[in-house]
Length: 85
Image (cartoon, rainbow, N blue to C red; front, side):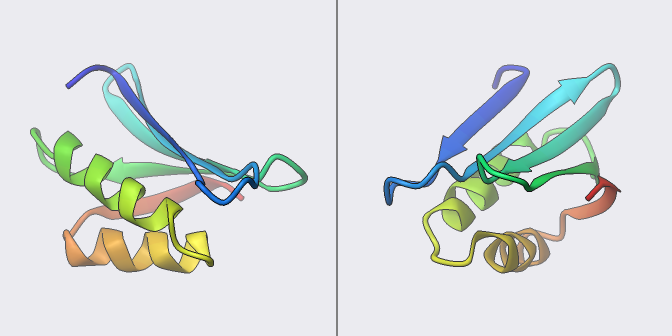
């Protein structure tokens, strides 16, 4: 997989979830297109990118994206640390 993955909410709203690689770190980014921009640093072993993409894709289609994100990350045992909230 590449250096990032991007997912947009399908309901016509501007919610966005994605992950990106910054040097050796991987970050998850959430933006609602208005006033909320959040970033988490991912703490996971190598080869987790596909699981992370699956978690983001599952969360972004839910009505409450952020709670769904935490549930999906926990299901896959992907730990994150908030660096900007």
